[in-house]
Image (tube, rainbow, N blue to C red; front, side, top):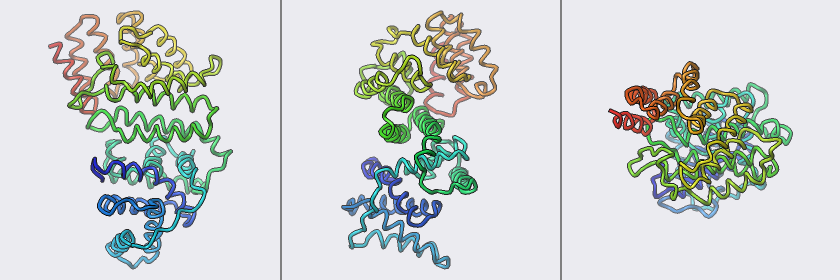
Length: 411
């Protein structure tokens, strides 16, 4: 994979990937082999572009290399080494690459909607979107989701097979079908961003590539349907949440809690953009879950300090969100607001009830919230015990380190 100095090339490849893939799929009608060929073309670009320079027509270069890869693959008797040599030779050719076919402006959206097929689970759709639309390698996706590369490769292969078995194939998604898949697309982008914002892998807190890719794709979807309130709500939510990126970690990658963050490091441009999106689309008589979450994020962003946050309004919004999207996760987030408005004693019975939920019990967040409430109530021993228990339930190194540090402070 490219190093830090090659990040502009990596970003360009991620943006070109769905356009090139769409063109190759249209020509060869086989998504699986086309996608493999485009991935090989991107790897060839990573190898050759830093030294030889980016071609004048990078999309055409990738398209040509991918098509040559497919032409090579038709001869089943050729060894893999011979095929890779041909790809490398094609990459070094001095002849100008062909122009990409016309009509590529919408390829990214086409591939995004195509990958959000109703036959797929959310997890499979996210993986396929990251590979086919985001241009990430299988190894990178596997790292993000804390699974072996072989497991992720099987998941992506099964996702492709599920779409083929459903009879839809990989033909372009028409306007009516795109409308039916719109909510699924928003959910996939939301899950993609969340994985980047607080990744499950045992590494740093953030995966910047996933966050940036989710925001980029959300912008494209919003540009297509400017009057869709929930799409604007999702984009606003991602921008307002991502605006805190630089303040969420310290110089050694350590987690910094919201009440301790340096708000001068928050990205004011993203906050302004998110607030403007929300103000244009928020309708009191017809809000959706993403709009409500964006409104909560906006209240945090507007507060000059943690103490000045409008917690009563945030609690009211969580009440609305719990009606629109009843879930243990929403209920747990609401508990924090209850504690800020009515005190930790009022929130303790709520968190004790949520601790019995099987899904929450497997994770660390309900224990972390309980620890915070015990700490505020002055029960240092119980708070320390809950912080340590929470630390054992998270696979993220930054979160585990922070939880153990909170426990050590109470020793």
